[in-house]
Image (tube, helix red, strand yellow):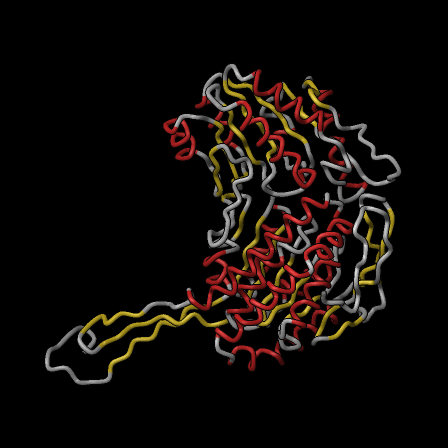
Amino acid sequence: MTRWKFPFDARDYEFTPYVQAQNWIGGEWRPARSGAAEDVINPRHGKAMGKVVFSGAADVEDAFAAATAALPAWKAMPIRERAQVLYRVKALMEANLDELSWLLSHENGKTIAQARGSVLKGIECVEMGASLQNMADGGQLDVSRGVNCRVIHEPLGVVAGIVPFNFPTMVPLWMLPQALVAGNTFILKPSEKVPYGAMRLAEIFQEAGLPDGVLNIVHGGKDAVETIIDHEGIKAVAFVGSTPVAKMLYARGAQTGKKVLGLGGAKNHLVVVPDASPQVTSDNIVASYTGCAGQRCMAASVLLAVGEVDHIVEQVAQRSRELVPGKDIGAIISQESRERILRYIDEAEAAGATILVDGRGATVPGSEGYWVGPTIIDGCTPEMACVREEIFGPVLSIIRTSTLDEALAIENASPFGNAACIYTTSGAVAERALSRFEAGMCGVNIGVPVPREPFAFGGWNDSKFGHGDMTGMDGFRFWTRPRKVTVKWELQSDQTWMS
């Protein structure tokens, strides 16, 4: 097995100290120019497992200089040779799946099963990127006698990605494979809460043969983000995070003329009707709202219970009560996030809702980490904050409705438009809901309707700012610009509008 410069040897949940995460610039580890660093907290234990450097504008400029220097040679390399790097990245990630998964679990707080699943999804994204060598043909056509038109997808240059804490390995791999195989060089700004997944990706890409300077990583906070989005030399920025930040970065980046795609928050609605399969529905709803401790944009947030579905709601509640924090459900990323989640539950209860399943007192023996157990709030109204705002925790709010039309009207009224799902055994009911959902990713009996590669990921409305989607061929198009070429070599005896 490959041994990295910074191996992580833990293979269980016991607290394990680690290293200081540094910037990766020009193929080498560097401290921040200011010397600043902050703690990286293991959420399961509530204490620092290491530190991460905190960068400013000068560090971003260093990364930009390295990316600029590496660009000509990388851009000139044939796409098939660039794709070979991704094949090797895939093999290295598969060979080191255990280490990558346990490192992710320690820095993020996920259970090992959920950590492993997110790494595997990242590997799938790498595989998609490698396949782009066979899919990136822009097309060509003889449009007239002796006249040919074709499209060439060219790299933009130096581009960047700003990613959140909830998927330290997977979300960067929504961006890197498409951007790199297209011929761009890249600056990645990970969440300062989870720097180690990106650090390991740097080592993997280098071992896979990626030339120095093609991938650069700058850790930090607001200063680093603002420098990236304002930098006129960075031609595109992709962002995944909250809606307010996504909206701000989209507007701010447009002023420099760069491409910006910002995926924001979500308030995903699940609709259950009386003919739904109780077992399929209850298991799926619980997996949706508790997976990754609810800290994912695809998590269920609101259950719209149509008509007589108490038998299904009770199964959801019973299955939720059986989940064991620490074993079946991971930790909340920080104490601040935990307190925010608890406030939503407290406010809903004070407003008259019923706490059907209460996770506020969740603890894990021997742990001083940040825990919230599965929580179900019944009897909610559309005006409640727990229904309107993104909680980002394992909390499901239930609104009772009499008709499907009433449920769809509530879903449509949300400013978000990330995901929605209908639970039914009727094809007609499913198609009716699918045609009226105001969401970019929809499911039938699937509460986490994440499109698998090669289909693209992205919501609507306040869940996305920009054009196109983040993954699949849409992702490749985002990181490129089309050059349209029209060619004529011979004089034709007949006349056309191009003559």
